[in-house]
Structures are given as C-alpha cells and as structure tokens.
Image 1 (cartoon, rainbow, N blue to C red):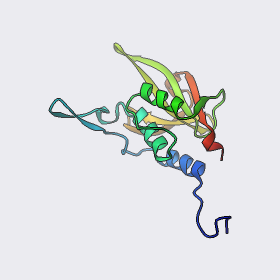
Image 2: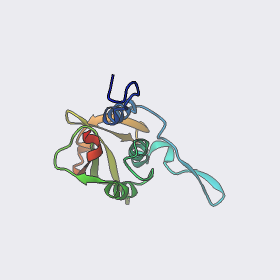
Image 3: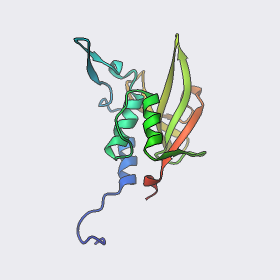
Length: 153
C-alpha cells in the first residue's frame, strides 16, 4: 500500500523510458498531414523527416514540453522553454541533438533520446521509424544533451 491508500501513483520516469524503448519500429510517427493550398500533403514525407515529431510527441505525452513540433529547431526552442537544460554527460532519457548533416544543398539536424550503454533511439529515414543505434549517429557528433529535473523523481 502506498501513502495514498490504494490509489496508484504513476511512475513518470519509468513510463517515459519504457515508451521510448517501446517506440522502436513503430510507424505511428511516420506521417503528419496538412492542407497546403488546397492539397493534402504529408509534411513528414512518410517518415523521412520524423525525428522531431517522434521526440516531441513523447515529450508532450508526459507534459515535458509545450507542443508537438515537426522541426528540430522548433523542438529545441520549446525544450529550452520547458525547463530542459544542457548537461555534459547523457543520462537514460536525455535528449540528444546531433550536428547537422549536409544532404545535397540542404542541411538536416537530428534529434533523439539517449538509451544508455552508448546507444540512442531516434527516427531512421531509411526505415521510416524509430530505431536503436550507436550514440554517434552515422558518425555525427552530439552537439547538445538536454535533461529535465522532472525526470529525477
């Protein structure tokens, strides 16, 4: 029995980490549709551009961010405004931001979660779903690591 009698107390950090892990292979973050002009358009290009959507969807479920975002830039801005701060060494569940990668004329930022043991979970544009991979995503350096004190509980 807990201090609230029989009322369950949700374990936010444990549920957060479990949801991140259970997202591996999920197609639920693959698409986000909008009307552009008068045409329906998938803004995430069937999972090619889903990393920010994946990360911020999970953060929003746990009320760790203000909104769901489709861009890494928007995600980082909201993360900073929602009590997240930079740390030097990653902890399980911390947010990782990798350096931008050039693809043709465009540069693409990338964001994901630290899973522990030098592993990360982020969206793969090749698989169009979250995957677990090496902390150094395709040899890209991590340029920022964010943590929120709400996860210390």
